[in-house]
Length: 256
Length: 307
Image 1 (cartoon, rainbow over the protein chains, first blue to last red):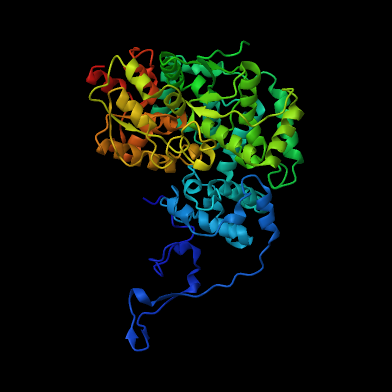
Image 2 (cartoon, each protein chain N blue to C red):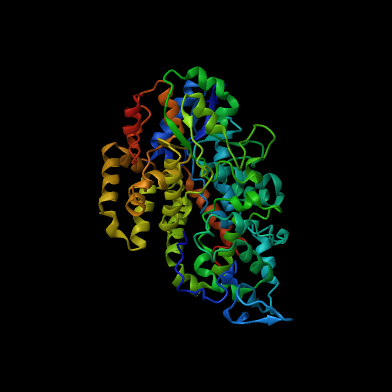
């Protein structure tokens, strides 16, 4: 069941049966109505041809940037077998989410292509099926995090417009995890709902029932008692200091 | 604080288990105690990072490893037991990485030094244990059988392992011992459920993902994945789904009313934690196992079956 709306980059009838059709530009597909080659009629399925594409102007420094991060340190090992895409949980739902292609784009430093996938790149659910099955232990699940870092650095404008929800939620997580040392799930839920403009749902029947249930059996009050780890401020300072001083793209200051 | 005795283990509760998922917390403690191991919470624990810190370099490894240091310095325990699969994954990931990679260990230790909370540096010797794997390896199936006083005869359970309990093997298999579960087809939960007298069903989505990570940003994906899992389990004839992760509970249990609203009655099935079922079989009451906490109402099935 594909959840993806096809509006962004419509899959034309042209070349519809090509797997990973989204990777090919419309102009590069040649389809003839009636085609005869060497006296053999190949009309129908066999008459689709893909023109070979030449990509140039790669930025190889890009590869180095990924390699230096913790999550992307194994990018050089990938040999493009496609096992990650084959085992991906998200790909059946969002056809344009293709880990193999993303890793390839990162290896080449092909920013132009990466830009087209900003809206799906963050959809990884982190189930690690790809990393489990990868024959070269590239760890594609974490490579998607590296892709996120790159997008954040090179396309801050697009991140602000297209990925606003994702960034807002990440910010809430960051504030809680680093700022308080513990996660207040009730606060996380409500503030995320507020940020995404879904406050109305909070007073809907389903949410109200759940909140009422938790207040009744006392769980709502245990959330209030969760508190903060003792001496967390020293850890917080150490972490923020570390994030400021690293000189890879993991640096909190770069990008957005 | 006193150091641990032989029958005690250092326990990392995590943020979810102390608050909304107290059912899992309480029943884990009950079951472990019955099986002869007392779980002792580490004081001053901090969040493991729940995967949202991964792109922040060594800071993501500092979060779990600070808890390992706490266990060592306060309770004198090298190993740390936890029940949440997401926490388990974060711990395992950090430990595997710093063992393999000297640079990353140095970076983590630089943060430890900066924070100045512990006098010593982190030495990668201890390990993180998931409660399921821990009980399986330390006590075994026979101990479960011996403690079962109220066998769950006739209850058909669909075991749901989720993603991060067994995957990826590059992180979970850090040592030869203890024996870890198979990454593609785990079986520890099956063994435990059979030991308490329940039946397990095969439904094909045992290690499928619930989409819990993007639950807030991307509900649609999570709902679709969850409805697939629930309806498959229902089709296979399961009465309940058994979980070992609070994040899966967030997706499958707490959100179930919304999933049913969207995908229909096929996606309605009671969800419980494995340890709740074990506690019930060990003779604890339904109140003690906190069955009432679950939103998907497992009490109805449990009462119908007469346990």
